[in-house]
Image (cartoon, rainbow, N blue to C red; front, side, top):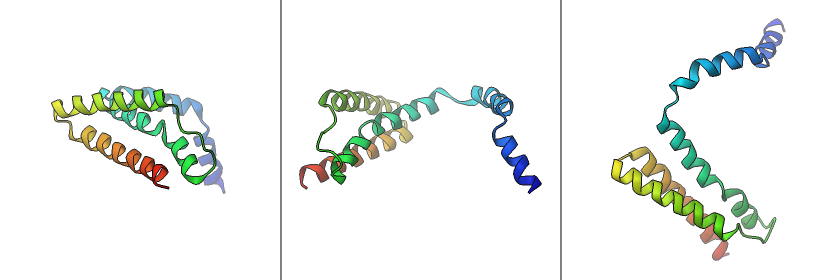
Length: 109
């Protein structure tokens, strides 16, 4: 029981969290942040597409949101291809594939 209480205290120890962030934040590279940005761009339309597929709503995501996010992802894919960045090529390609599958499920329902 003592270990559980100490674990809970450490989990909510914000000074410890702040110290850990200050210690590890400089080790995060620009490539890591770029990869996370790609993932977030792909995830922008997934909740709405999932809601349409499951029948929770009949409203599609706004066209401008989809066009701008796909346009940005296409440019990032082109950049990754030029730089031969395999991680981003695979991530963006897989994201395009998953989103295309979601849209196909909606269109050919």
